Image (cartoon, rainbow, N blue to C red; front, side, top):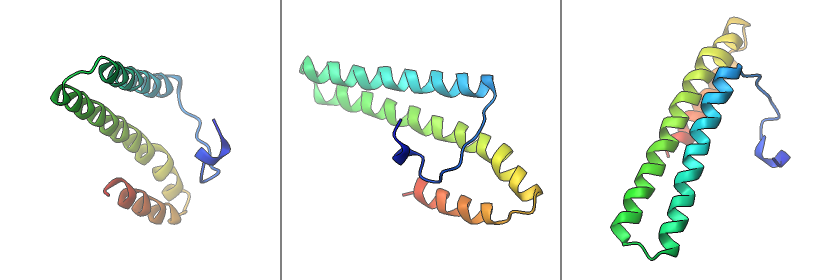
Length: 100
């Protein structure tokens, strides 16, 4: 991965279970996207492709929900307990981006 993807410069150590769950979700999404490519190559009907795009979008939303819940329970909670209320502003900014 390029450094540009890690905008904040922060890192997070995840449990093996959390990492495995998130990676499995991403690999399923990757497979769905490859399926979209295949559908285009095979000249699939528009509504069939759009239905698959909706499934990919739903899977990404589900991934975001799981990751956000993990973030709230770990990173945000820990920083608030440590007296770092700036994490609340960071969270508000994140939620604004997610709700666009």
